[in-house]
Image 1 (cartoon, one colour):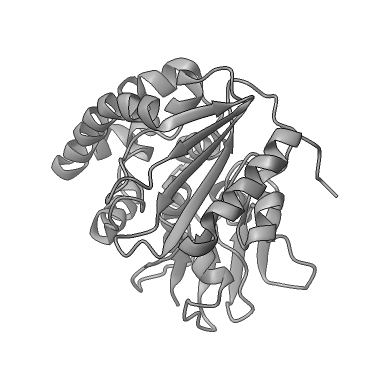
Image 2 (cartoon, rainbow, N blue to C red):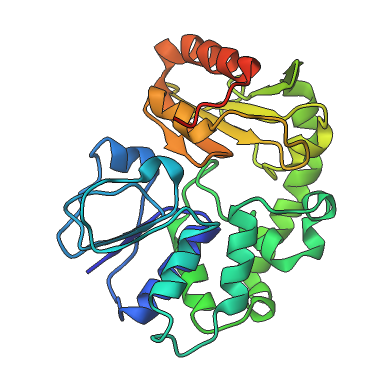
Amino acid sequence: MRIVTRPDLDGIVCAVLLSEALDVKAPILWVEPNDVQKGRVDIREQDIIANLPYDERCALWFDHHFTNQIDKPFKGAFEIAPSAAGIIFKYYKDRFRRNYSELVQATDKIDSANLTLDEVLHPENYPYVLLSLTVSNEAQPNEPYWNMLVALFSEQDIQQVLKNVEVKQHCQDVIYQNDRYVDVLKQHTVINQHVALTDFRSFDKPPAGNRFLVYSLFPESSVNVRIRYEDQHKDMVVINLGHSIFNPGCKVNVGLMLAQFGGGGHRGAGSARVPQSKADETISQIVDQLLANKHNES
């Protein structure tokens, strides 16, 4: 029995909860949603998938993404909710020896981007927000760190976790990166009406930083399109979209829209991966739909 999830705070907390509720000892399999969608992940019949698209080979599935809804019977739970961790916490509410309420509430808040301007500009003053920014697969995969966080949160509260030497170093790195990231965003973002387009394809290694900063820097925009190469081979391009958390003017369900291009996500945030040869055409189509700014729920 393995836990299969993605490397973000929600995935970390899903793994914490499932490990305890089901006494899972096997190493966690960290994967990206697109790899599950494309059938590139070796899912086994006893696997528990969380915070990822459904795969019929799994034993249990827990998710909350708009575009991952299915119309077939399955074991587990699906709900349009702030986080997948919150769904698991409710599903196994009587199986936990520790009180994870605060951790789950923080995960709900961060995964749903329900943040204040001060939390975005000064994450160092908000422990959960700061730690969440240390968990990313964009710059370089770091499975040992993700696994360590799962182990730490299984035994410790946030203040104790932040005292860990490695966690502390990652947090310091994030604070430094964010200072630089402001300048990088200003240099590589253009505004087209209400759409902020951030293109990092000129970088061999995309810059790391707080993904919410762009909304504070360009308050006139209601949606951000962020583009980067998936890895150093530059044969695949990752397109991330997000509604501004400070300017609620975008009417487009971006997860549903990105499903047209092999991606998906939530109403307010999502991603797609496309071949480099098709990237410019795809980006143009996405921007056109965002500029039209029409509801696309059906």
